[in-house]
Amino acid sequence: MHNKEGKVRRAWIVLVVAVALAAALAGPAAATKDITVSVTLVELGVDVSPEAWNIGLIGPTVIAGPAAFTATNVSEVEEAIVIWCDASSPSGWQPVQSWGGVPPLNYYAMGAALEGQETPTFVYANPVYLTTTAVAPGASIGFSLWFRAPGYGTPPSSETIVVTLAGAAPPSPPGGPGDW
Amino acid sequence: MLKTRRIAMRLGLVVTGAAALLSAYGMGRAATPPDPHKGGLVVRPGGLLIQDVVPGETYDLKAKAGVALTIFNREEREHTYALSTRRPTEMGNRALPPGYADLPDPSWVAFDKDEVSVPARSSAEIGIRVTIPADERYFNQHWSVVVVIASKAKPGSMVSLAVLPRFEIETAAAARGTPPAGRLGLQPTKVALSGADGNNRLRGQFVVHNGDAVDHEYRFAVLPRGRTARGAFIHATSGFTWMPKTIRVVLADSRLRVAAGQSVAVPFQVISPRGIAVPPGGWEAIILVTGADRTTAFVRVQVTP
Image (tube, rainbow over all chains, first blue to last red; front, side, top):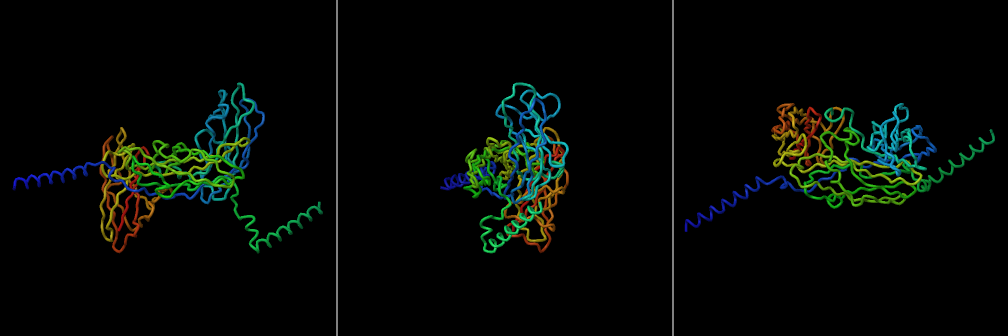
């Protein structure tokens, strides 16, 4: 009788230890709970004028511009303005980051500069900040675009290059990660 | 010339008078709302902090938290908007807040639709789903992703409009298990302490993992109100308030050297003077860890009553 009770007690101890070990060895998945979602920026919004720049007839490697545009922060918060080009145009033209040399066929360059800036920033397929400081709600900024046509070749009869202008959270202060 | 100017002035007076009359009866306001933002694209929200995401689970933010993206087309014609996600560092490192890294795969954040047409002067709501793959290394992570909502160019239009809301995604904190993925990993990324009822010391600790192939020296900084000296900031967890200046988070050392592939525990204390009670929601402080290679990570220290 005592022997049987002892076996049952031992079995319970083994079970409890096994459960405790399993809990101790369990991975972090045991931490499951609901997510928390907070809104950190109420909204973002942008408008631009004009919507188009008709460059007209242009020869190979010729630079057109500047063409003046106005971007407006139409949101209720401060935001930065970001700009980029489509990775490829309908005829397969691609943006490059250089004004210099003879560009290869089907590669164009697009530059953008804020009003008062002398050196344009190259606009290519990755978004870049057009403004490094925040634009106030309702405020507008003027900027210009330049376009250099691709090198020699058989050009399409017409081509549309799409430039995208975006409202984004302002960048972190200068210095970059590690210099916070 | 003189005659023309006189006519213009008279017309101007008439228009001003009519507007004043309409306004007095509340009619002018209804006819022309005082909205200076008459065009463009607006998206809400412009930024989210999504916390406690458990790897291996899919979260529908609308179902879990009532949050969705709303696209407002304020233009006079219909627009089609394409939705996608990108790494913040594609815009340069300054697009990332301190302590966050690019979401390894931007497709882990997805939408109900990749494209939506919104009629003129209308809006559309888009659901957001977040899925971090099941992998123990993905606990204790602070990631960031940029959502791109861009109008598709129409014939005759060269400049398209977009907005780039940024989502910060923090996976669930876990004190044990495989070290977090990345060159610098902290474990756990959230240390919850309780019982600060004044004049006491709460003790906590986290582990610094050097996931790089070379040794690193790390610096520690406690950020008051989540803000660095240069003004970069980390958002507080919803419901928590920043730890007041009278409460001190104290680490034994301000620097730590960790050999390649090794881990070192970092103990710290939260010291509160007598007579200061923890608010119901709790206090939060940030310990920012910075490597010599400028990699950053942080721990949220939370004190509840």
